[in-house]
Length: 210
Image 1 (spheres, rainbow, N blue to C red):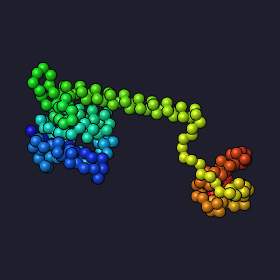
Image 2: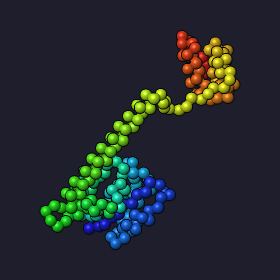
Image 3: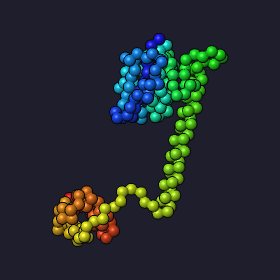
Image 4: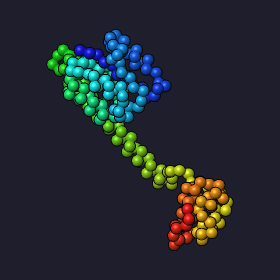
């Protein structure tokens, strides 16, 4: 049986010492400690994939906490099933004693207990995500009802904007020239120019030279 350890921190600046310290006493060979410095949003991590490619039936993977595998519980469940069922290796999560798939004495094996606990954690995490999303939607609806507007704050156009719009409308100058005169970007001027036409000249066609 080979023993592996997986360590993950979100950025290169974060320290891995706390996770390394937790491994003391497990005699994990240095060559079997795999570390990634990146987000846990998905499983596309170089060191993690290298470790998964090396493990065999009967091996043990040690991690400090379950969120080191990832932030997405559907991904965690998928990897848990792959490691413990497809490969036949064990997982030990140091921060949660019940997440230990190694066989225990008694009627229930560690793997069964760990699988049940992980399923419950996944359910709780998914329920919490749905509740947070629902609260966000409710908060947005209440804010809109109070007249609060979302999105970027409109840029106040300089003096002379209307005169420039009229010149562009009657093709006395191009939109790019108008933007340069007002000292704003071409995109900003064109967006506000469109709004001007919709408000003051709704029958105009936006065919002016850009």
